[in-house]
Length: 85
Image (tube, rainbow, N blue to C red; front, side, top):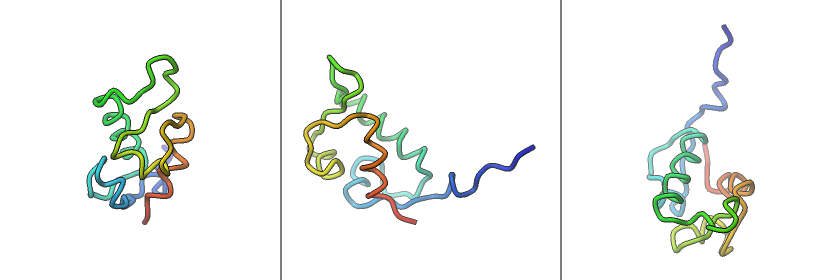
């Protein structure tokens, strides 16, 4: 049986801006994305007409570089700037 990719599951530390949404605990990237989606859904930030778009609020704006709306496919690009080893 293949061993899980340790780099893929390595805990990453969120920046202060990202920690406001997902918490301050170091966690794997997959868990960060899951917590981001939990926050987006809980606060109704997924665009109603185009479900692929995420609307920013006061907590997400610093993470999304001040953009009012981003594509869900771009979220990973923005998150990577807020995660460190």
